[in-house]
Length: 84
Image: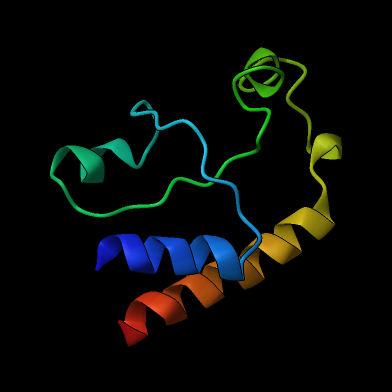
Protein backbone atom coordinates (compact mmCIF):
# COMPACT_ATOMS: atom_id res chain seq x y z
CA UNK A 1 0.00 0.00 0.00
CA UNK A 2 2.70 2.52 0.96
CA UNK A 3 4.65 1.76 -2.24
CA UNK A 4 1.55 2.47 -4.31
CA UNK A 5 1.05 5.80 -2.52
CA UNK A 6 4.73 6.68 -2.94
CA UNK A 7 4.63 5.82 -6.65
CA UNK A 8 1.50 7.96 -7.10
CA UNK A 9 3.08 10.90 -5.27
CA UNK A 10 6.22 10.71 -7.40
CA UNK A 11 4.28 10.38 -10.67
CA UNK A 12 1.72 13.12 -9.99
CA UNK A 13 4.26 15.68 -8.79
CA UNK A 14 7.10 15.17 -11.26
CA UNK A 15 9.47 14.20 -8.45
CA UNK A 16 12.62 12.13 -8.45
CA UNK A 17 13.30 9.64 -5.69
CA UNK A 18 16.79 10.30 -4.50
CA UNK A 19 19.26 8.76 -2.16
CA UNK A 20 17.86 8.29 1.34
CA UNK A 21 19.64 10.11 4.09
CA UNK A 22 18.95 10.39 7.80
CA UNK A 23 20.65 13.57 8.91
CA UNK A 24 17.79 16.00 8.30
CA UNK A 25 14.83 17.11 10.40
CA UNK A 26 12.82 14.20 9.07
CA UNK A 27 15.13 11.64 10.70
CA UNK A 28 13.22 11.59 14.00
CA UNK A 29 10.21 10.25 12.08
CA UNK A 30 12.21 7.79 10.00
CA UNK A 31 13.89 6.33 13.09
CA UNK A 32 10.46 5.71 14.64
CA UNK A 33 9.33 4.08 11.37
CA UNK A 34 6.82 6.85 10.72
CA UNK A 35 6.47 7.45 6.97
CA UNK A 36 7.98 10.80 6.02
CA UNK A 37 9.13 12.73 3.01
CA UNK A 38 12.28 14.82 2.86
CA UNK A 39 12.24 17.29 0.01
CA UNK A 40 15.48 18.82 -1.20
CA UNK A 41 17.26 19.83 -4.36
CA UNK A 42 18.64 17.13 -6.61
CA UNK A 43 22.11 18.65 -6.26
CA UNK A 44 22.04 18.70 -2.45
CA UNK A 45 25.02 16.40 -1.98
CA UNK A 46 27.14 17.78 -4.79
CA UNK A 47 26.64 21.55 -4.88
CA UNK A 48 24.37 22.77 -2.11
CA UNK A 49 26.36 21.07 0.63
CA UNK A 50 29.13 23.59 -0.14
CA UNK A 51 26.76 26.56 0.36
CA UNK A 52 24.21 25.54 3.00
CA UNK A 53 24.80 27.17 6.40
CA UNK A 54 27.83 29.11 5.18
CA UNK A 55 28.36 32.82 4.53
CA UNK A 56 27.46 32.09 0.88
CA UNK A 57 23.96 30.86 1.86
CA UNK A 58 22.01 33.93 0.73
CA UNK A 59 18.34 34.61 0.08
CA UNK A 60 19.20 35.72 -3.46
CA UNK A 61 19.94 32.09 -4.32
CA UNK A 62 16.37 31.02 -3.58
CA UNK A 63 14.22 30.49 -6.66
CA UNK A 64 10.74 31.67 -5.68
CA UNK A 65 9.14 29.91 -8.65
CA UNK A 66 10.53 26.59 -7.47
CA UNK A 67 9.13 27.26 -3.98
CA UNK A 68 5.71 28.07 -5.44
CA UNK A 69 5.68 24.82 -7.40
CA UNK A 70 6.90 22.92 -4.36
CA UNK A 71 4.10 24.33 -2.21
CA UNK A 72 1.55 23.14 -4.78
CA UNK A 73 3.16 19.72 -4.80
CA UNK A 74 3.08 19.49 -1.00
CA UNK A 75 -0.63 20.33 -0.99
CA UNK A 76 -1.19 17.65 -3.64
CA UNK A 77 0.85 15.12 -1.65
CA UNK A 78 -1.18 15.79 1.49
CA UNK A 79 -4.36 15.27 -0.57
CA UNK A 80 -3.10 11.94 -1.91
CA UNK A 81 -2.19 10.73 1.57
CA UNK A 82 -5.48 11.97 3.02
CA UNK A 83 -7.47 10.00 0.41
CA UNK A 84 -5.56 6.77 1.04
